[in-house]
Length: 437
Image (cartoon, rainbow, N blue to C red; front, side, top):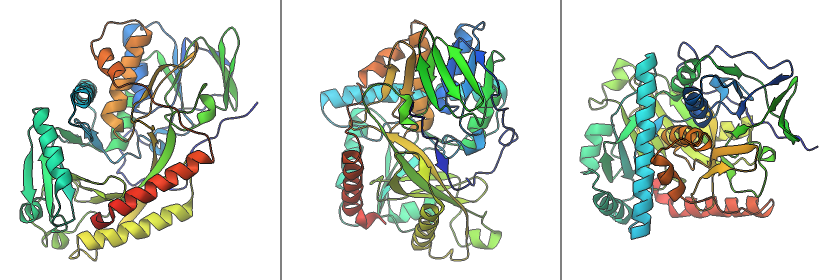
């Protein structure tokens, strides 16, 4: 039997920890049975488990994760809870799909707000919107297209020039930007830890329990290093990680993105900038450009640099290279803050599909999945997980139609063709966006 690869990031995230971030659950050390086993304790897996328990509190539900909450891909997120699709399109079909996508993202935000309010979770949740910015001068075609597409969706937006952006962001690096109000900024490590900690009592959690494989017979047998779980149903919430667990054709691939965070700015450093509130910024070119945040505790976050990570492995040399890139980029964007130092650089994996559609639904008679996040992980995976529970338990929910309207992820070729294709695609995007960094 071929055992599944186990994701590993040779770095530590820098988000300030919450009260639950360092309280891992025990490791599974015996053979047990369950009504449902959920592999992966990220936003999709936790949302699926919570909704499953709400529908039927008598179910025995088990969540296993290869690591602890603090080390998970969800905790390594940059904390943008997106309420609008990144790419809208202008045709009737594209607009219909964009509206469905928007409905789903906003329902994901609503679900998160409900849990946060109910359980009084502390995660620096701030509904402050975001800026979508370009650095290149003289060409604003992409922003104009984005503005026209927002108009088609009846979404509010505001264009800002370089001087206006300076007053909001403290830098003149960007020539223009569009502000939209429908985005929430959050500390993702605190959020995912709080969501996991507040799960119903009929959900049992095991950390540091990687799934090595799944055997099929009259029931599924989920294999872990020190115990086997027998169950009639498995939900895979691993996105593109451990592809050996997913039956059928390959439809998604894992990419690693890197983020860095600085020390909190001193009063003297802050005095060199305009008076700023918390803000988030995404670039017009998501691959070449840089995502920035200024947090409520006066830190800067920089996310830039994407590499293939088909086995979920990121080593220390790759992290060091990303740190050097981020430090140079930060000083380019904020030249007056030369004394500000990066304290942590870390990687996180995202799942990409060839046609941007999710992999959602049944994979075989034992396994279902909500995966293929394509970079909009927090809100999208939350609603994808909860809707999958409704779908599997035959609950009537109008958002299921929106989910199905996004289509199915298309087939991806195996390695080495996939590796070559991804590298060429990244090289192309970096060349096209070379003026954005």
